[in-house]
Length: 349
Image (cartoon, rainbow, N blue to C red; front, side):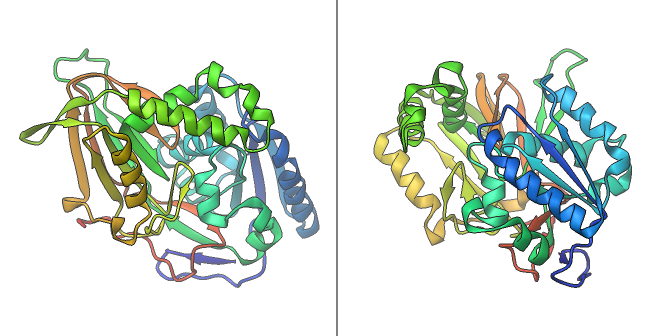
């Protein structure tokens, strides 16, 4: 195994050097039943190598309860621990955000190596790091994988002027993507109970057909909003920020996960042909654009739907959104990212 992105430090390849494998499993995720074989394979590797192995389940108590869970595991975390998250992108995001931002965790915990295990719906991060689960094996990932430093998108949300004192600035980290507007509105539709459990889900390809129909309808229903962008006031359909070659199951974006910049696209029109043009544009070689000064700032004048790695929430009117690369990287185990990858330059782009 090789560590990449820490001043050129490397370790011998094809040997597992972790002292502990820690698995966190979300029993309620979309593909919870299918990740059992991955967990059994990890346990067998740990037993064969004589290293520690433990598994815990996420809490049904929501985001704060799961932040408390990762905090309780603090003594087990560090650079010699492989944290395998058998869940979807939202749960992976939750645990990575806690790793990087919880001030109560020891500094060594931030160097914990994360391996997502394709336990959810999109599994964008797992695909970007190691491909589809049916095209790879954990033995290959553990034996040949590279530990890479990846800098997430840092989305700072500042409350409106005049908000109550107890309303504090919030920071959300996005490993894969963040969006504000139409696609978040569509994700909100997809997450409703009526659409999550549908008769089409049991048919081959039925889930994909269902999701496509819901997304197209939701994108056309999504409202256009007014935002302040510096000194300008403009109409907005969506701001999209992408951090790697895959966005909400769309594969083929010309952007490496370790690139020193992110992709930003603003959509201001709402027409079917425009929507499909932007999907095409995302996967075209010319799609990658550096963002001036390394950040984007805007303030919606009405409530706006937002999503961070698939987790959806409503953004109150007047909230200032500032997006840039985080200075703090997360370390991930990847077999599809070259060992020569280096950490991002977090200065201006």
